[in-house]
Amino acid sequence: MFVNSSHRQVPRDLLSLGVCLMRTILPSWAGVFLVMSHAGAAEFNIRPISDETLIGREPTISSNGLAAWISYNTNDVATENSTVMVYWQNDLQDIVGGTAGGIYGATKPIASGTSVVFVASIFGRRSAPTWELVEVENRHEEGQREVPALYAAFERDGAQVLEPIIDPDATNLTRTITVTNEAGEVVEERTEPIKTLRHPSGEAEIWRWNTGALELDRITVDLRNDFLPSFDDDIITWQKAKGFPFGWEIMARVATNYIQLTTNYYYDMGPVAQGRNVAWYGWDGYDYEIYLYDADTDQTVQITSNRYDDVAPVMWDGVVVWEGYPAVEADIFMWKDGEIRNISQNLDDDLYPRIWDGHVVWQGFDGDDFEIFYYNVEQGGEAIKLTTNTYDDTNPDIRDNLIIWSGYFDNWDAEIFAIDMKSSSFPDQQDYNPLTENEEDDLYPKTAGGRIIWQHDQDGQYRIMLAEPR
Image (cartoon, rainbow, N blue to C red; front, side, top):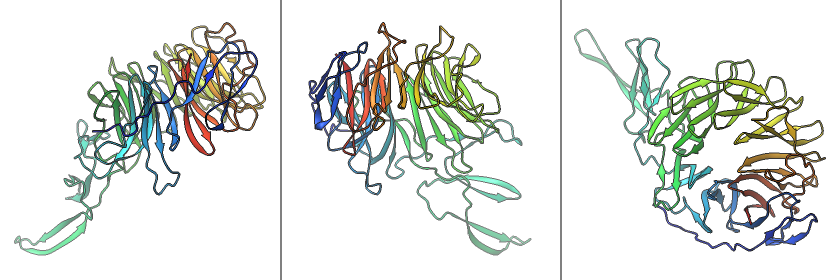
């Protein structure tokens, strides 16, 4: 159970940010200065939504307006303990700090709809493992075998024997060896340690919180680390540590059905869920390739098959976009209707692709600095360079007719920029004024539902900012 340990009402009128051709500097909270945006952009109200006494990082927001981030009160790694804060309908809540069960180390929140999925650990092994990872098929036996999250392995009569360790808290595991003669008499009895081949990789688990819920939904219960969750509607996906001999597998929960999407000796990582699909990148013995799972058909296809790395996939409505490294630099590739196309066509690095409803953005190096590029999936043709300036534009995001990014406007600190895709000047205008203008970094923006959330460095302590359409 959790309690709302920090209900706070955040004023909605701290700052109104309007559309204006002239750039007017306005005083804001805690001495920060924000600036009116360029013509053609949406109008926003901008305000801080995090507790000013805490540090906020990893902001995320859903199309419904549910915002979440991790929060902690110190940068001392020996004593810090992060929690997840959510901001919903003008109410700020700590959804982890008040829960029972000793949850700690919360990280990687993802907001979608009216839910948040995140990673957190729990003190002690309070629950017996309920998940057994399917191992690679044994060549000497039919079918697949399942091995508990923790087991002991040793030789008996020339064969490897696997025995589950019943007590998950057991330490210094040993077994007794008895040697008898032909008459069956005990001639030797000794104790030796058990060789543990697969040990707990950790207790980082996946959790889900729904607005209005009084309990956290614990998605995973085992002795393996679970990381990098992603979810959309009724599909949650993540990567699970195998323990020795290492590697990761891709897992998914579709509605209430748990599915292990990969079973190999390699590394499968970075899963993303959208609609009824899950995409990820995995090692195939030579390099990383892109894979796609369809929950409706329960089938997985390998999208790429080459001799260079393909990583960091994103997708929307069955269109998959990723970073590929056919040479030293990265290019942006797209898979649509079974065909692959290089959509960046750039001699320098193209990174961090994002996709929404047939529109793709990324940051690309133009020989001098990083700029923001745009590609229309339906129209095809060449990518459009949205920005042309003398400073880096990085970390773009796109959703619900907004394109946003961080730009080092004065070549000193990062500011937030936004493009309204419904503007008559889109995509031709290339000179954009910043949405913020101050002397500290505004970083890692995310957008959904016409809102923008980001991480603001206020005197070395990160706060979470929210821009909402007026």
